[in-house]
Length: 234
Image 1 (tube, rainbow, N blue to C red):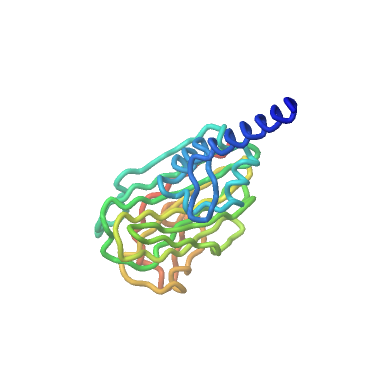
Image 2 (cartoon, rainbow, N blue to C red):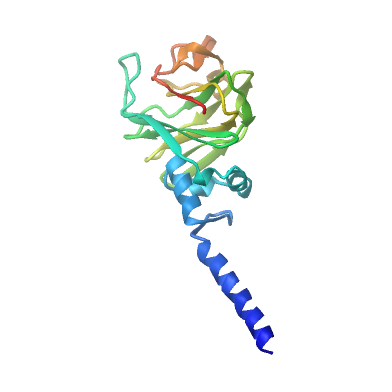
């Protein structure tokens, strides 16, 4: 009898311990430990946890990225190469690497953009390759939208993101890459309205906007030519 009670006590203790490890549960029912929650905040921003699927989190766990260093570079109040700019934003590029690297690019608007059309965000790869394409998304006050189908190239990818009519806008994209080479990230804001189809009129080139987007046709001269960021993957 004592042995049975002891086993029951151990089981109850273990269950309580596991439950205590759950720090946050998102709207899709995905459970995060405190360390996982903080990792997502540092890689993206507070609130991005609600975009994370169980598959996303399991990949982070499989790669043990939570225990790895995070590197971050930023351009505050991003200024374009042309003068007709309407509002400031901060561009952050973050990476965490183990056997693969997770790279995230986030544009945080410090004001509300006047033009709300299709912006583009993406990456150019030099000497590396995509191991998993990830997702992109936009969040704002009472608004959230995810994008799962990028325009893919042999040297990178890009997303067209519709900017919502709201405040506190954040646009992000992420993917996984092999641990070698260099990755360039760029976020380009449309200075006038453009269709989704026309927003995809670009190739990827180091000679393009933010060292990523080389626009042509109806997309040429639409975007603000903002400076990009880059990381060596190691």
